[in-house]
Length: 135
Image (tube, rainbow, N blue to C red):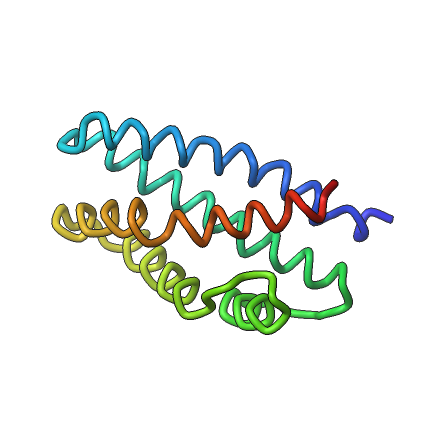
């Protein structure tokens, strides 16, 4: 029974992280030169991405697809029409890994731009998908 609702429990946490990401995106739009807001935006993205792929994993397991690693999860989520753009999710994974291990101001600014312009739509699509399944 716990396994059956694991993805819903994790989705609850994801919803909170997703809301924080939206707050950070709005704050960044209001003050795009604030380094602290940019750092908060990047951290909110990291948490949202981490919870997203783990929720994908739990949802796939719930549906009988055993996966473990993030790339594997993303590929299966794409193959099962859970996400629309698998390559963009792989790009997000790679960017998340880079920014988590190396802090460079120019890289951080580029990551903020990517989050706001490219990464937010697939996160929104996945969030909407899960909202439809959780109801």
